[in-house]
Image 1 (cartoon, rainbow, N blue to C red):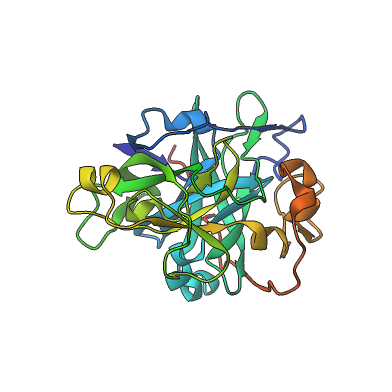
Image 2: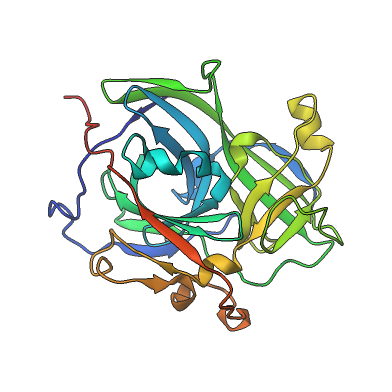
Amino acid sequence: MVRSIFPARNPYRSGECVHFPELLYIRPVPEKRPSSGRVSNPHGYKGTLLHVHLEGGTWGTIEGTAVMVAPGVALTASHVLSDYFNEIKEGKAYVILQGYLDDGPIFWCASYFTNIVGTDLLLITLELRSDVPSDNCFRIAPMRVTAPAPGSFVRIVGMVATGHSSDGTFPVVDGIMNYSYDTFEAAGAVEERTQPRLINGPSISVNCGGFGGMSGGPAYDEDGYVIGVLSASFEGPSQEETLMNPPAPATISLLSPALQVPVRPSWFPGEQTYYRRLSEMRSFIDDPSKLVQQSCWKALEFKAGRFGGDIRKPD
């Protein structure tokens, strides 16, 4: 059981952070064989793997998974939150993202959402809502534009909520949501052809299964670079069947369209007043020269109606 507390303060705005934090890159150990099962140490992703929490005041849900791809910018699948876009705009619900470090959880509040039209990709602009990591370092998952070749292996990772009520929610009492979760991974070979299209935008099919909460989770190539996010997968009659003998391949939305639209950074000092594209943040991309710029990708940005500022850590 995990006890989640959502602090309201931003340490940068309150002047608590004296030293500019350092950015480091974290890549998981490469996977070059079929595999599946629980991840025994999700802290090993150093805060780059994130729960997507939807909060409604007295209730909360875990809608999916996201991955940190730039300072204060997370990438997930659009369908993870698309049913709640109106509630988020109107301030009836807000979004908290939570990762895990060696010394405890780290919390982020979603302030802006950039939906890439014609794809299943969503960029979320974040503001820090917990203490700066004890080593003063934030980790980023580096990206790769090049799609993995057929026959190569891709690993997907996601966080799946457990123990919720029949309507999929967890109660929030005095700003605390008690919930439990499992982190799963599955790796399989890239198929020669993409399966009949279930989503829009560039995608690949991977011969592995997945669960609902894994949606939006990162897909890593054999070298540990993020190449997209999980958009669709199929569950078998049991957990074991889903992972070991998936009924159909998983669909991965490739990330290249998300690199080509304006996104609004919001929390890093000096990054708060202008737009930029992730493709301009070349240090986060392994092969930026291979990105074919396309003007066809459009984005719809909207601002969260409210942040999680009314949820405070109890004394």
